[in-house]
Every structure is written in C-alpha cells, then in structure tokens.
Length: 387
Image (cartoon, rainbow, N blue to C red; front, side, top):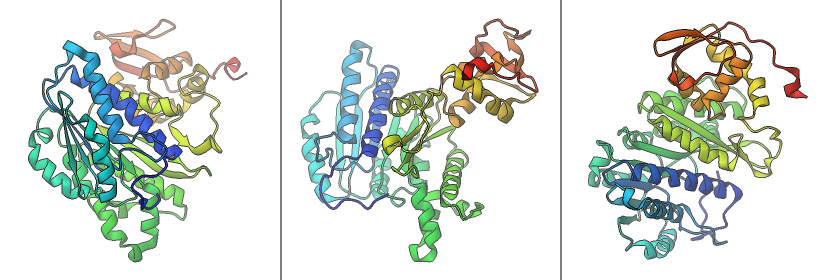
C-alpha cells in the first residue's frame, strides 16, 4: 500500500473504483433487505472516510453509502420498517475532513437519516462511538463498518472484535497482508512485534511457518487473520477479494466478515459484478479469464478438486456444504457444484424429509437435503465439455 496522499483529494485509481463498486453493490442490497425487516435503527460506520470525492469527480465511499441508504428507503416506500439510519464518518486528516464536510452537507436534512462526522483517529473515535451507540453492539440492530486504512496500522483487532460482537454486525475491511509481510521482514526496525500484535490482537501471527516466499507468507498472514476472526471474534463467515498490481502480484485484500450466510451470498454477488474470478487485477495481467466460475464446463473440471478436498466417501449436510462453498471457493451457488459432482456419479444418496433415496439421474432440490452421501470416486468428465 502507498502512503496517504498529502493533498485533500486525489485521482481515483482502478483499484479504488473497484472497491467503490463492490461497496455500492453490497450496500444497495444491505439497506434494501434490512431496512424492510429490522424495526430498529441501522448503524453505518466509515472509519477512514476520506474527502468524499476524488479529483476526477468520482464519488467516494461516504457519498455512495448515503445515496445507497436514501435510494433503498425511497424504493421501499411503505414497506420500509427501519427507524433512523445513523451514518458515522471518521476522518483524521483536517484537509480531507473539510472536503468531506462540504460534500455531505447537502444530505444533512434528509428524513430518516442522521449523519455524524468525526475528525479523529479511527480507533479513538470508535471508543466514543461504542459508548454513544451501545445498542448496536449488544442487540439485533443492523450494523455495517467499512474500514479502508492506508496500510497495516490504524485498525486494532480488538476494535474489529468489538464491532463484530453483535450477531447483526458486519465488517468490510482492507487487509494489507502484503504490507504485513514487509513489516514482519523488516523486523525490529519497523516495530514489527507491536504492529502485528495489535493488528492480530495477539502474537498468533508469530506461530506461522514462514518461508522465503513473500507472496506465500502474505497468504499465510491472510489465513491467520481469517482464523482469528473465527476463533477470537466468533465470526461464522469470512471471504477475501484479492486485489493485484499490474504485474499480477497480490497488493492487498478486501476482507468481509459476517455471521449471516445471506450476507456472504450478497457480498460475493457484489464482488462478482467487479470480477467473476474474485481476483481484481489492473489490466487483468497474467490472468486466465477464459471461463466464468459457474459455467458448466468449469464446474465439471473443478468438481474433482472439491470432491477430493471435502466430500470423498463422506456424508455431509447441505448447510455445511453451502457454507464451505461460499467461504472457500469462487462459487456462489452450492446447487451447481452438487449438480456437477452428481453428473460425474459422485453422489450416492440424499436424505430428504427423513428418507434416504438414491440419487440416480433424477433432479434433486439440494436445499431440501438434510444429508448428502458421497461416493469415494468420480467418473471422468465428458470429453465434449472441454472441446
């Protein structure tokens, strides 16, 4: 990651536009769904809000968030159930904060919307936010945080864990695993122990078996952070979107954390709108984008890897398989993975309504299956799929 720009505004890069596109698509769904179902306030926090606009006129994350909230409320009409949408934007830099104030001024009087601007360091600002909005972290109030810092510092794991204390909390975080690896390698000169302990909430990162390959180490740090979210913060689902430089090297990850599988589905749908392979690369350099993930030929080809990794000779529930597919594969539709494995004669039976039935060639509604029994081998894929 580059250092924070010195000017109040700067030009939006291709990566920046990708982040904004993902955030916009997800928030449109988040406000629309929860605004119609949650009869409470809703809380949104942008921890590194920036100036609100870029030099080329592109709207920043605060503007697209406010517009997504307003559009969802307007479209819902009488079906809207949520009370006040409380939106908090935190920005430390005074010049950027001044620009942000100017950009958000026109939204201050909109009905059902409450905007708060805080000129402070994010971690310090969050302590005050937590005290002021206690219900968001102990109740069923919908809460979403977008955290887009410059580099590794600025987002203590303890803060992320506090944000995710409620079952309805979600965090979308820029995780600079590549920067973490550079700091780790720099050692004492970069204060690596303190920086990484703060980022991970403990010294768990030091237990990783690092190698001489920086790219591999960055991926291990990402995996360790996701594990921390699951174990230390109690998060059920996480999913990373890899951003790469124009030389094909991973630059950083956008990491989503939620306790609701529907939230994970909607975020992956938002990510697919930017890149169907879940790897956004400047100019798509060095990448093979021949197939979209859910195409039949790709599923037939990849089914063996998924089968061997998770299903070989086992019996598993549909919910368990769906959670695994959403978190650990590029796919969004568990039914298509299962159909591909079924097509290669890899599924023996399914338990539906308490009754065990052989699968055969008949269509199966997988979401109705309590248990799915897998064989210990797959038939070879049909050659014509790859012609």
